[in-house]
Length: 236
Image (tube, rainbow, N blue to C red; front, side, top):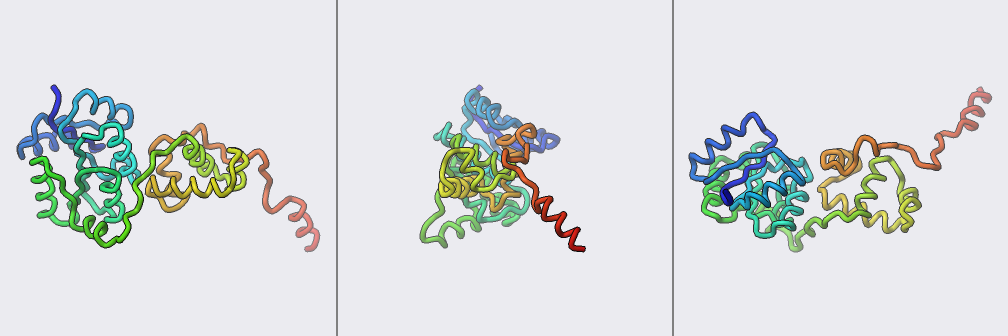
């Protein structure tokens, strides 16, 4: 059967509850899954849902980026990102920038939350008040996320392994300025602010695997150098 509502949630123990609640409100043919990436794409391709509801934290901070990828593959898919806990409005804004149709958050008020569901049930788009304020207050909207090309994925792997900008440039045979441009685009696309957040996002999205984390460059040297340490000891 095609059409209906696809719900994507990692709260597996609550799937039956979600299905019952949504169907009691009028959503048709509700199917719930916790699979992601290629598995999720396959379900969308086979089911061809009229609406996909997904938890805003499904991929943590990178959910807006991942939903942007899904919209690229399925441009006519109606997607609603829904959050049941605290979530930064600036991050919620990126759902809309990346092409998601609707976003609303329980923590912005029950009335808003109910109104959001009423709208998407009718096939209408809905953006929460707080996120809409973030959009309206800007003269120029931030750029939507770019799809991460292989060269940017390689930069992510190098950064996660602790390589410095010059080391990454040597490995990839590019300039240090290109490395910096790639780094900024990666941070913006994945909605991360620093290396620690990038590391967690890369692990969550399987951009970096445990086997790829080597944490050493071919020119690795200890700092401070042993000879300097010995001189300091001799001075004492």
